[in-house]
Length: 589
Image (cartoon, rainbow, N blue to C red; front, side, top):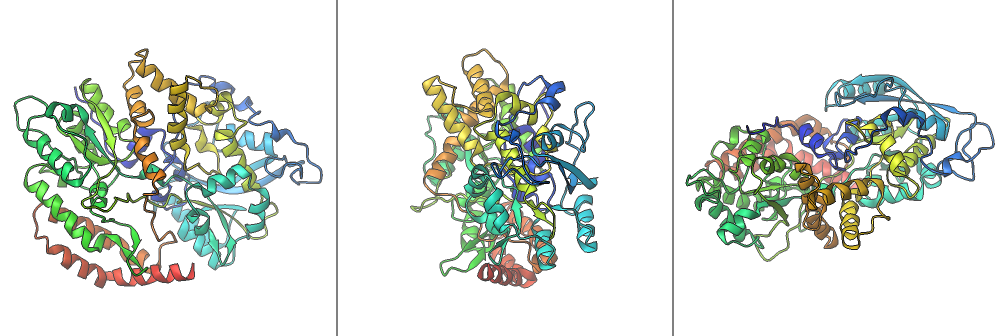
């Protein structure tokens, strides 16, 4: 029986378990910003002992002098003596799972904060509902409006702007310089300067960004290489090659069942989402959907309405007309398209690095001979392709003006990053505080930041270790991945997930593609990374809906000239106003 997967963004991310990306996709300032930055599930079995694992680093035992002051000998991880109480709030979701005897107020991370740093956490309120516009965002908006704020305030970009405009926030510029560890500073700058810049107003740092990874969301082409071999085709180097492969996968019976039942390229009704996604093919035409880019004159413009988009949509329309795209894609979400993929009906899809974990592994489960490999995006002309990536910060930790210990949030984040990936961490501490037996323990930590290069470094370090057979330099997370891949390659594990991790982190894995993008400076970052402008708040939802509807209808056969009508309407219905506000933001920034 074919496995059916209910498609949601959360399903994909929960299946992934290794993604350090998509912070920017969550714009409500909740703990879900860390949910999309998950980690590998280790096989740690010491769950009942995790609350006693307190030796994450050797530096946290520093003794302080002075009342409620961090030890000057260690401003990064020194312990408050006597302890301090730090107030904040939490917005959680249904994926939070607590070990027996633990709660959001009392768990391995709250214990670590108190034992190692002398920080006792107190939450003014805890609510469930982390979707944009949901209960959590509404509750925070009420707190902001009433001025009833905790000392550390987790906010999204819009809320950060509101608090800054109201003069409610502590200037963290000097605090950051002194108390952010060198490792944390490295992490906050890994994804470029935009993350810190997005929290900076008038040259003053007013919040600490909860960083993710932009590079992890770069597009790539996933292809059934067993079908390529069967049909005598080579991997694509140009868009013309992609179109040739798509035609062959549709018309030459690559599955060998004698039926005309295969499609060249997968698509889903939402058009985007990281699987069966049109972003990659559009980027091949130098079109950038839903992204703010610079034009030739240096102004910021909206990528979805540029002429290159019309050309790309014309090509997709031709593919659909020729039967190379599922005729029913317009009513199928990613889950339904995943069913086609897992049942040997799809030969190629534009997606992201995590796709082997969902849904390609299901194809492997159903057909052991199926083999997928990722390849870089290709260009439609002689100009190099520049894969677009999103802004990877969706949450910020601001500090209420006048808070007694504004540095405490930085010390907490120092502890988080050192425990996860620092030089002093150990496999035992990594397991104790991050993963194990289905518990995503990192979610209990109220203040976080994630290395944008985390997954790329796993690839680089694991592949180097496979060559040298020396795993001594791998951190705990890297060793976990190495073990999964090695067990799959030598046949000691039959777990299909071993194949999935190999397709991501081994020599021919998806991070080989991302490594190429990064090494060649190909990634295209968004030019706008501020809070939603007033016109965006009022009008963008309607514009986004019209965009999806128009593009879908054009692909399915509507006149290509309807693109020009859409552009005209987009401008009149608020697009021009939004564009002006975005450019005003850029000038003031």
